[in-house]
Amino acid sequence: MGLIVQKYGGSSVADAESIKRVAKRIVETRKAGNDVVVVVSAMGDTTDELVDLANQVTPFASGRELDMLLTAGERISMALLAMAIKSLGQDARSYTGSQAGLITDSKHGSARIVDVSPKRVREALDAGAVAIVAGFQGFSRLTGDITTLGRGGSDTTAVALAAALDAEVCEIYTDVDGVFTADPRVVPAAHKIERITSEEMLELAAAGAKVLYIRAVEYARRHGVTLHVRSSFNNNEGTLVINPKDGDTMEEPIIAGVASDLSEAKVTVVGVPDVPGMAAQIFTIVASTDANIDMIVQNVSTAATGRTDISFTLPKSDGAKVLKALEDAKGDIGFDSLQYDDQIGKLALVGAGMRTNAGVSAKLFTALFEAGINIEMISTSEIRISVVTRADTINEAVRVVHSAFGLDAEELAQVHGGTGR
Ligand code: ADP
Ligand code: ASP
Ligand code: MG
Image 1 (tube, rainbow, N blue to C red):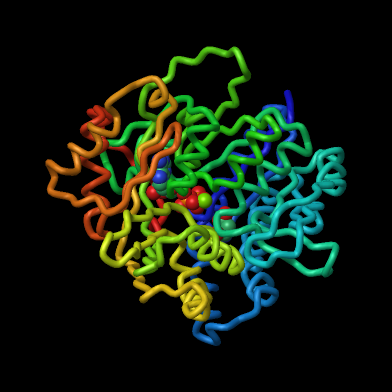
Image 2: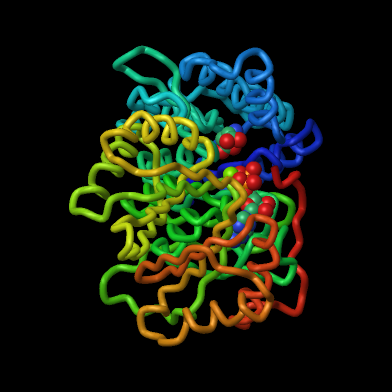
């Protein structure tokens, strides 16, 4: 028997009863002869509630204090879970991220892991105990401060520990039975995917399928960690996220799934002079704000004015600072005005089989047309097609596209817990 890392998300430890249920499952895994390292998220919607609380005190909290506040959520669940396991007669010890050796850079709110030295976790395992680690948090040696890894970051903690400890598998326990062809809360007819490549999972995660955090998928891919996403509410097999090596053959469906994202906004720079260097200037300014932009569309300029519009999408949370930076440079760039639209939704269709199959875009656009949904922007990569629509049509868009590609299952998907927040 080997070492297993299990990560339990917030909905799996939402209250005392859930914590006791999860504790039983962990003890069973330990009793079967495995070494067990558990990574735990904050209970239920605790992190969101702490963010709301901070906003009520001030909308301008520093990253350092926000991280200090948010990491408290995982400390609560790790201690309660350790207590629950001990009460079942199995030794368990809880550790904060820094105690578990998760060293990060000093970027509050989205720190990156730079080193993992889980000495104390190993000691706990050697002593026969289950090690419980608070997810989503680390420690910066540079500043001596506590950091967080970005929302959803407990997944990354689990993968990083699995890699450092050379675990057999990293199990991600959540409130659905695995990775589905679409969010089961949006498409009840979505079906569970048995095996998905990390390449496709990365695209789905990047496009808003929050069942796995994108950085965790990246980390697992780089370090060859096998992920098993499954429900903590039953014993069903979930979804394996695998890293096929060159030469491996895997039967791939054309489409892996559909994802959507309502967290983005669209900025349009109106009336940009159509001369060389304008895009460079605009996106250098945007880059200086550290915003992660995604789709970019530039129109053909009108002959009469020699001017064009450039639109791009970005997280709503970056909207204000990007608008300000561009407004400050208005004189230099010489554009007419800025438009900001936060009522957009983004849909992405993902599948490795797109590489070798024609007609996927045509089918997608036809499905949206037949549903009367207008497409505002389009972008593609080798294995993904993304479109922007109005926010209030996005769920309908996901359902019709899911159906058009024959992904609907006979049986409805089950969501076992959580609020979907
Ligand atoms: P946890 O608290 O366990 O980390 P999350 O809320 O982060 O759980 O992720 C699980 C949720 O992800 C599900 O409840 C589901 O609504 C959502 N989700 C979005 N896209 C997908 C997908 N393709 N497959 C499964 N779940 C998805
Ligand atoms: N509790 C954190 C969040 O809600 C981290 C996580 O659950 O993965 O984002
Ligand atoms: Mg999550």
